[in-house]
Amino acid sequence: MKIREANVKDAKLIASIISESNKDVAVTFNLNQDNNPKHPSFCSSDWVEADFERGEEYFLYEDRAYSVACVAFENPRLGVGYLNRLSVLSEHRRQGIGEALVQHVIQYAKTKKITRVSIGIIAEHHKLKNWYLKLGFVEGNIKTFPHLPFDVQYLHYII
Image (cartoon, rainbow, N blue to C red; front, side):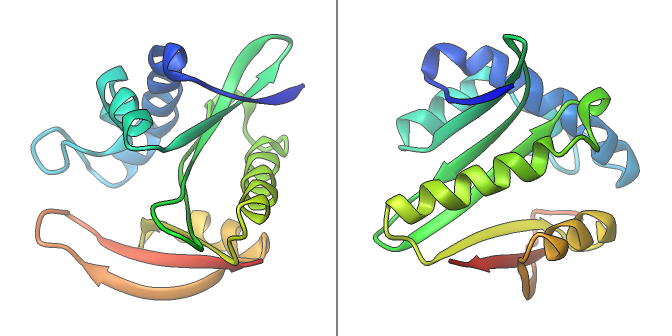
């Protein structure tokens, strides 16, 4: 098992992992193309390619040369880091893969002199929030966006 840096040639694979990994969330929170077309469960390779063009970096978790999870890291300005699109295929969950990817991003952020890594999740996704809290993240603000059918809970990790 290893974590490797992805590149734009991996866009289709990454999109597939993100989409497949987030389908259960879409079902749980009644999300669809009409009420949330940008939800990760609808991720396409075009989205991932646009992320790469914006400077977002992706990492893939490989188990025997088969990619089973991914995470994105964004560094939009000096000192600011975002953990995005953490996605683990359902049959590979509860094996420490998500935690390994989060720790990878935190260690990577340190190399870029980032002192705080932020994330945003569905505010009502209590199971996910508790998981991040267990990893050392701290709750931040909850924000309502008119274009989203849910509130967003921000969390951050102080490095």
